[in-house]
Image 1 (cartoon, rainbow, N blue to C red):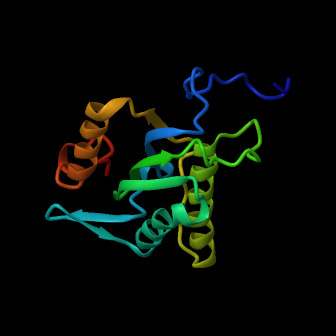
Image 2 (image 1 turned 135 degrees about the vertical axis):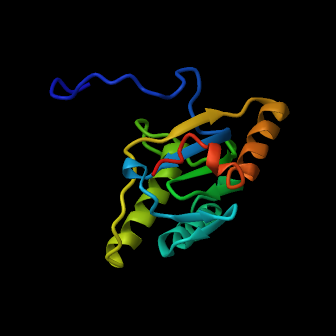
Length: 162
């Protein structure tokens, strides 16, 4: 660790290398601003950048052959997704300081940010992201249900900020 940088505790589980498995991820926009659109009558109405973000999530398996995104939702100010990483096909060329999951998330965030800049759209991501290692079918089913119902339950969502 550099003496000039603060010693931050990693939010990642120390017992796992994040290069194989199923993960529930949440990525928020900067200051939780509603860049991706709005929910009206329990329906997500995507902005231009929200549409582009969806297209980039759908492209993840094309850019990262070792990854699949079986389920996701783009909300006004955040994204939830389940990402599956096949540890048998994860490239060995990923730098040791990064993980397959962090490479995927970084690529998604970079693509959406570049789109916003090219199109003069105000946009920003929160610096970090939240992940949860999915442990078994019950955990996965609970998370899938949460993702599927996220738009309908927006009024009660902890991310629903004005």
